Image (cartoon, rainbow, N blue to C red):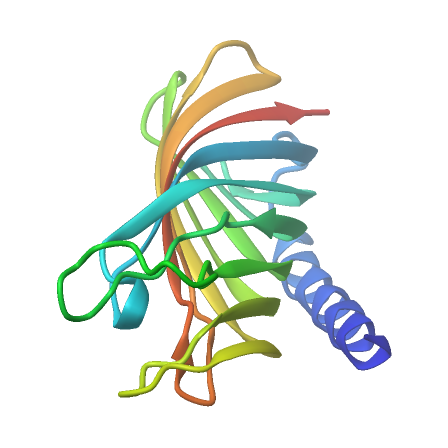
Length: 198
């Protein structure tokens, strides 16, 4: 756990330095702190969890620098819980009777960007380090239930609408990579989000 926290701290501090270098010559208006939350449908499309889905959530916050009147680049940190998806029986696609649900949650640290298409609409993107902990079935002839943790990556994109200067809502797609020891818990999430800027 100490190594994970140290990795997140180093990643966050290095990501904060990159936009700061660009922001020296950028306009000061449009710089802001933000906090956002997502809730949506999660899915695993491989292995014993193929086509399984559940509900997940994510919350993150950070700071964005205005690099031009319609483009912002920033750093973010957050946490997510991507739900519990039941393993499927590989022979008849029925739920496995024995406990076999997946579990995936973790911390994120990365970069994010906003591109304003108009005063109301924008596109967003994000990517970075995903420090995850999971529990799930291996993709073997005789699956084994394993508890795992590792560092990997996440990425996502979305479209949003500004309700006011400080509040927006959006639709997003995110992918969280989580693979280790023949257990693949990599999860997609399609979600609705709300963001508050201050």
